[in-house]
Length: 163
Image (cartoon, rainbow, N blue to C red; front, side):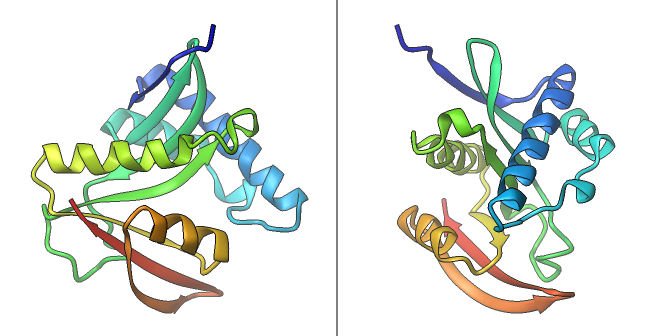
């Protein structure tokens, strides 16, 4: 019997496990020479705060966290010109290696799109590095690439999808 995957807002008590998945993902990417977030950039206090604010989304299977992302209602760092209340913003999407290639990343993003739509948000927005697999992933999900710019030592691509 295959366990059902449930995607929902995290309970505050799940923040530590969600943070552990983020760290595992960061280390895995770093080990394969494709670092996205460095483990020292990920802080447990931030993940706990996201959970307390209702911004942490988890995918669970048999009560285990197998996916995580942040869904925020504002992003003044990457979207300073955005009107308040018109979008949801996705950050730090990670899936357990045991669930890689299962479509869970796609289902997490779809959850964010449906959640934004249910709250009358016109857009779902995100930013990422200009990596071919990420560009293909977001393009396949119907996101439009808006622009690319330098932010510190990183290049950032901003994406938007109408809900």
